[in-house]
Length: 166
Image (cartoon, rainbow, N blue to C red; front, top):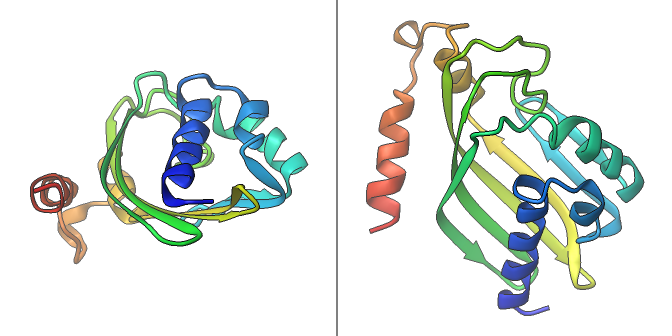
């Protein structure tokens, strides 16, 4: 699988999640023993059959309607892809993969994140997603960012948009 094919498969996979919203099509892009894990919340799982249910019952219905994703940078190797993304969404429903068990706050959340995707046999083998959960919790008012040694999330997003994309 060449780099162009990996990018096309990844873009097809994310379209199946965020646009088409079809769990069967999303897992069709994956190997049988695939894994997906959102590390800050440990949401995800292992195996194509498990992931089909995860996408159908947890991930896809947990994506708020007005969610946007913006790729700010992408690196592609021989069998992997790393993408920096800014995801923006209203917290107008429970979002189990991002804020499990928390009722909607009505606030907007902007999440700079990194996803590492590995490929095998012309399909996706794994996804690992990383983000700053403290910044997410500060945006919905569960913690106060002023009391913590952390950057303002708007500064992080601005840096990614201005520096990485230029």
